Length: 486
Length: 142
Image 1: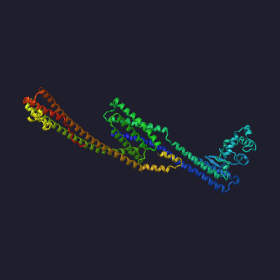
Image 2 (image 1 turned 60 degrees about the vertical axis):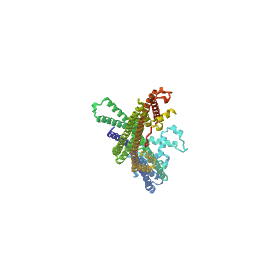
Image 3 (image 1 turned 180 degrees about the vertical axis):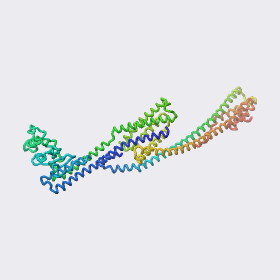
């Protein structure tokens, strides 16, 4: 594989990693934006409650508005505006209530709907008596879309009594035993049957009757503050839950990474064949089989890469560039292990190549990571960083290679010189042996000459030459006689 | 990593400061640490590779010297074997030639026959000397 092709693959791998990182970043940005919005929502909701409390203090209680019997009605109006708005604001939906405050037929306006609020317990008619008076005074109020708002506990009671028939009411409601009486049921029935105000024109307040009394509104609004904080927390928790990595997004990352890596492998395989001098029309079925093999392998690698990066970045504290490099290194080392098994490389070669694969992956990871941080454009930053890192690494490794080549050349020269020296020494030895052989053959021939006189002299010469001690050599008549006769 | 920190933020923001410190570490300091580590790895890798080549070179030199030594010894052994075998061959023939003199009185033998026996003794001793000859291993640097 040429350097250009490898570089292109490397860039594509880091681009995929950067894209998965971008997906994660989008989710994270949404989460942080949701938190920021929620900060504002909570703040404005709490402000609404504070404002309501201040208004009640200054405009109602201090001025003794409504007197002892009517003050709670004004407290209820202001508290309803504060609580209603705060509950809407904490959800990010803005203010909905407006306090009219003009002693006219309308107390509150909610999103354009006119509301008359009645918080009356006197007469035991669940505020319905006060509504009847208002209806007589302003008969067109309901017809014009107006609504009556009563304490939440009054509304619940009216609803409950309304659903009972006479028989049921007769059985369940008793006179003077606490709780609603049959008389209450009759009053509610007669109010609703009278027809000028139906149940649909009634609505519950966010507050109960006792909560808006002069001595209670402070704790009511205090409790509401806690409720708002609790709602805020659950909204934040929901936002965090929604920002979880999902199998669907993981599948998207996996399939896109597979398609990109498979596509890149296809293009690079075709380009490599074309660079080998073949035009597309001259591709044989074998060439296409090679290309299909490369593409398929690229597809599988891409799937593994996409899934691994998505899992590693979301379930562990691993940056995307590093996750991609882990996948690249894993595939690279697996390939080297395959070559080792097939005997193409030895164990030392395997270790060296595996180290090289891991180093290149680490360089790629670091440079992409730095590139992405310095150039905060998704994908582009990682690709530029990766290119710069790899080019620097190649420059460094090519300088090291040159040094290594020089070293190998020196070793080669030394070996050639050694071979020459050893060959020369061997030749000298052979020459010496051959010379000694020639001499030996001469002496041997003389020692076994058919001429006995020559043979005797030759045998003496031979014995002395091969190292027999001169006193043991029979080289005189005396020695011969002494040897044979004694 | 930042998403994991989001959990702490959702739970009330207690982990935000710690998360920010961690993220700051992953910035320039982290890059520097990673860069230095990587540079050291590259250097160690290159050094190790060069050392491996040097070790290989030394081993190859030693193996070549040993091969040359063994080849020299082989040539010397061949030479000694040939000398011994040829002498032995001649001796056997010579011995066969004097078998008829076995048991004779030396003094009654002719001068030629006496010389023939004396030459046989000398040649036999020469053969004995060859049999006890050693091939000396030359001194090496190993």
